[in-house]
Image (cartoon, rainbow, N blue to C red):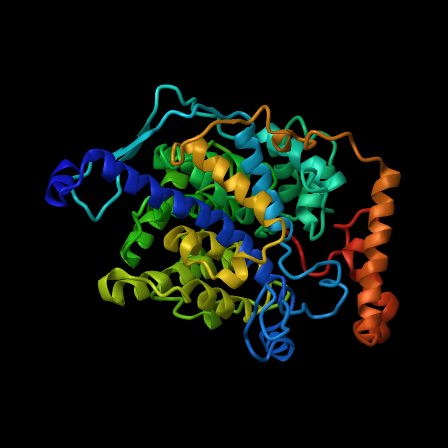
Length: 492
């Protein structure tokens, strides 16, 4: 890097400051971009593309008040969306936060500055990025048992730091987490469920949706370490090799885009290939788990096969939650951004790019929140936080709290000066540093939410509540003590 610095007449200190600021913007962009994709995707989750257009004919979404007298785009009034408010994220972001909080819990950093450097002399690459600070302790990566414990708390009590309910819980995760022995041997329980209960057929997207923070945690670790932790933590709930390799590729892509290693579609193709090779060569010896059908992966991710979102049939029920649909749509959206950036003057990207691409994705319906959650992580990492639309990011629920955790991660990674001690941050504890919630208290919260949701439907003129009544109640997960059992369409 020294020749580049000399040529630009920059001191090493100035160059380091610029690199840290760029990486910090991309790290925060990844986390916020994913949460925004989740929140915007909620508008059309479980709808077909035709229903999405009927519900939102303007194809425009805003999460903030705007003049003259306009408020956030209202969510379609139905039993699925009425428990939420505009700007809310869903279980996708909750589960990603469980991983982030697990990582932060073991972290401790001083206020001393950190040097971020690259051994590459090429100014157009950020490969071989390293981070050094003798006073900064590298936190441990999340542990499968800790993730299992946090998932169990979430299923039973919701996201404790914010005390939000576990809305949107998928069938697979809910069943696996509730199975005896999950806390001790989560991978075994997940494997047995996939093998014996689903007949090795279920490959939903519930592990991929939470994976993006792992790419950030491994920003200064090797790509192989990133692949390995994504593999290990994906198997906590999802044993199917399609799910595992999707997590490997997804986390690897997040790490690469934030590091600036994705500039062409060929870079994306190469990373997918490396992820597949790692998965096949790094087998753990489980019979029947690897290698897997590479042609099925290619059918959803190859640029010569998938040219448009229409090709992925994202609203094709009952396969909307298929993990390759989420992986493929995220990769396709990233390809679009890469092509647009390559064709822009001076490499500058349009500030509307994130909004336009995510809107186009969610208007295809299907499992839109999960698809946009993953795509939003990739886009946010590629474009950075500053490129995210203000009328979305300023309307994100719990925005200040969320940004605080993103900035804490930046401190831990050495991208921001400051002090952070995860042990003292009670939000990072499994129970959020709070007493446990009793079953009676949880039932009261569910009942209050149910009443609030049906008041919305009633105030909207009856709508779905009048048309389908009891049938809708029986389909909606939040009317049950076990909210995942009959959540319409959610299998992850």
